[in-house]
Length: 73
Image 1: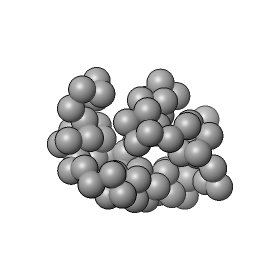
Image 2: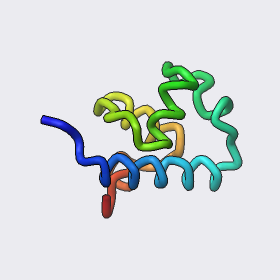
Image 3: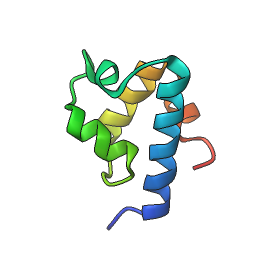
Image 4: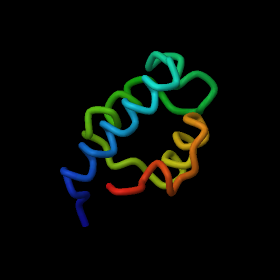
């Protein structure tokens, strides 16, 4: 089963908006969160179907719940 490209783009935009709201660069975002810069950049561009464990790490980094990260997507 392939991921919905529209969902991936929306998730990427949400991640970018949360990162900007936190005042973080992409490099700041990946430090200490156990994923690479290129991996994170692909998520923001909507090119990568991130695993649930990665989405949980992102939510924690943004200080939101997983449901808040995914709400409305």
